[in-house]
Amino acid sequence: MPEENEKVEDFISLWKKKMENDIETPSTIGATLERIKQVQEENEQLRNKIKENIELITKTEVIITKAIEENESLKQQLKNAGMVDNVKVSDIQQENIMLNNKVISLEKNLTEKEVELVSKINEMDDLKRKLEAASTASKEIERSTAGKGSEVTTALIDNLKSELSKKKTQVNELENRISELTEENEFLNKELLEKMKKLPIDYVVPVEEPKSSVIKPQSTKPSSETLEILCQDLQSDLNKYKKIVEKLNKEKSELAQTIESGGFQLEPEEIKILKRDNEELKNELSQIQKSLQNKSQEAAWATQINEADKKIKSLQEQLEGKDHLIVELKAKQQSQPIVHEGPMSG
Image (cartoon, rainbow, N blue to C red):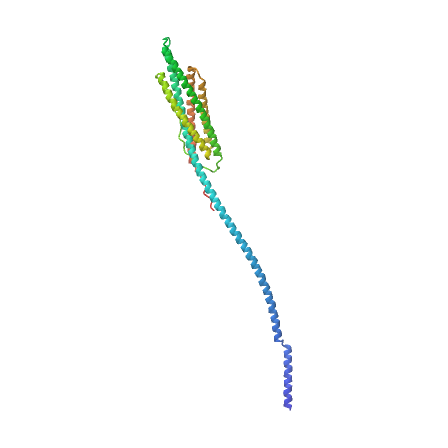
């Protein structure tokens, strides 16, 4: 029996020790529950952070989408603006080419008109010299037939005088017509300047060197022809003179149409001043021609013709100097480099 008691005591003591150890050692289930609770809290925190990150990513995507749309819109606007600029530059270039062609055509017409005016002035000088020769021949015939009392000769002289008077009247009418055409030419030149002022400042057209139109005075030679032959020559010259006036009228009409249809080049200020001087000289020449209309006496007529010839020669020398100066200025303008701006890049 004692052995059984010892076994019971040993069991009890062992059980007590185990109970003491169990009390001191925490429960495995309780620790697991605590750990699960901590993990759940951490999971909840992670869920919140993930949710916040998702919201932040969504907002960022919206901002990036808007930025991309704005960038595409700006690119399209820049592309459209570049296309518009290219179209405008092309239109301006085409317009400049058209204006250049019109200016070249107008300058050519003006040069031809000046040549015709010079030719017309030479024709007038020739007519005046023939009238002077006819008047001198008439006086010689009157002196040679004085005292003879020939009625036939007197009648012939009267007829020739009447014919000469008619020719003088026709010459005066033609001189008036020349003055009118000169005034119309001045008006067209003023209108040309107004058109040239409307061009852009940077518009440049190459200037061609004009042909020098120098008035060469013809030498006066005493005529030995009869009054009848002189009258025939005068009639022929008047017919040619009328054709020249008709041609000048036609060219004036074409010039007016050209001025109404396009723009023109703005010439240097020096050339404008010289052209105005030339117009003043031409006006002065026209005034001299008009003053000859009021001369009725043949002797006074011859004196006025001589004075006018001297004045015309002086004006011709001045015009020649002005023409040379214009040629030099235009040549100087051609020698200067012209910078052309290229088209804008889109």
